[in-house]
Length: 101
Image 1 (tube, rainbow, N blue to C red):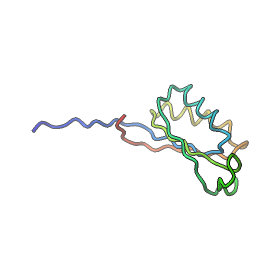
Image 2 (image 1 turned 30 degrees about the vertical axis):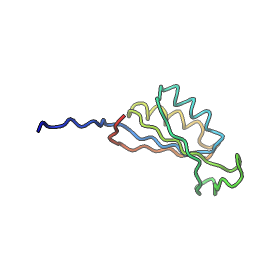
Image 3 (image 1 turned 90 degrees about the horizontal axis):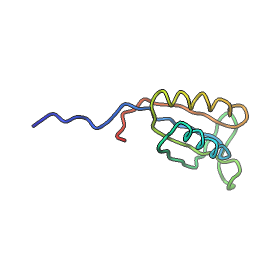
Image 4 (image 1 turned 180 degrees about the horizontal axis):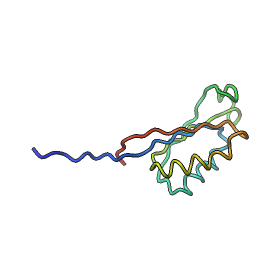
């Protein structure tokens, strides 16, 4: 039996959680970095900006956006997201991962 080459590559899982109103600008930002794919979910929670239950559509709602990118692209996106902090509820974090993509 020959040794198999692992089909995964090192990458960064970038997770962005913020107010739903930011969705369009965040998606534009991702596309400006040529991000090929992302996933968006409606989420609920509580943080420094209070509780976000999403009980009224379009009001007091948050989204979570996940994408897999390189370390360099994740850095550029995080720097660009900084402009939204203070104006909107927003947190972003990244994890080193191995991905099949």
